[in-house]
Image (tube, rainbow, N blue to C red; front, side, top):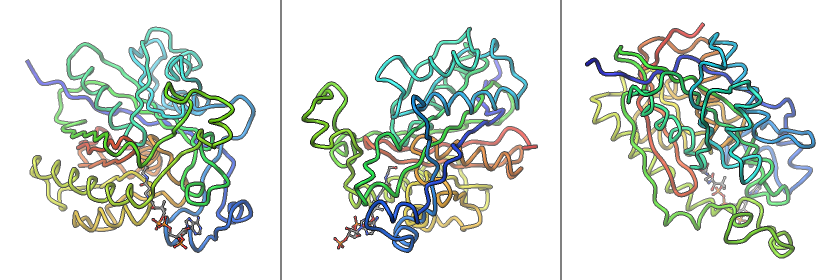
Length: 334
Ligand code: UT7
């Protein structure tokens, strides 16, 4: 029997209209555009405004654009996997809400919570459903309303994050295209360095958790930074090596967009030239699970992706959870 590969056949996306600039942030906390640009590399980020709107609102917009672009009917979708750590509610899954609001009635759906690494974990899961031969059309959607968890009085974290969503359709092919390899890791000893302390089962919401500001992102920036550079470089190098890829074979290196200095350090360690590194952090900041599919969405819209292009995607986030994926792109973007 021919080997079935899982290939991305379309990308949709959505970012909210509201642009939070460094200038506006500097009226909220003691910071400057210069500090944020030199230490992080972010100029602005998108923020979802509006009462009662959460991650599913943006995820639904991304999925609807994906269905419209690919011409696939909602009834053909068999599974919706949503990567998010800012789900609308603790339960039900945001995937269920996105499916409902996108008219997807014949699918099962659930959320993957792997923080910033969520898209690669969800994509790997979807690819395995396809490769098994059991499913033909799976949507992976990443949707994050990071602004709901950011403390806009904390200058160490509030410049970093933004909101957004992006979705990919994953289908089967017998061509040598699509997800050709993936390497994922988790090291829970890193949990203490990056977390949202309250709102889960250890510290359910109480007056105390609110008073202690425990419902906001807690991050020890330097510990995360060091691990991100080392682990993203190592895992990306390893996946290239075991697939006999050199820098010359790569069309694009697409890294998680958390800090421009992390991206530069990883690209340097890997010896990948800057013109092959996808960077859009200046516009959107860190949208957690959405950074990689938003990159793909932009590149698809800008017609930068060609059938057969070798892409390495690399990510790192809370957990710690990190990994890399080797994709051979499936179509000429149009
Ligand atoms: O996606 C999940 C993964 N997350 C990441 O990858 C984030 C990784 N970490 C980082 O990107 C960086 O550690 C940060 C951007 C969070 C912080 O940058 P840093 O270069 O590690 O700065 P720092 O925390 O060591 O702070 C240096 C100084 C401090 O002042 P003192 O103590 O030296 O006087 C901070 O108080 O910069 C100060 N500072 C700021 N100054 C102006 C921290 N935040 C700001 C700010 N504006 N927004």
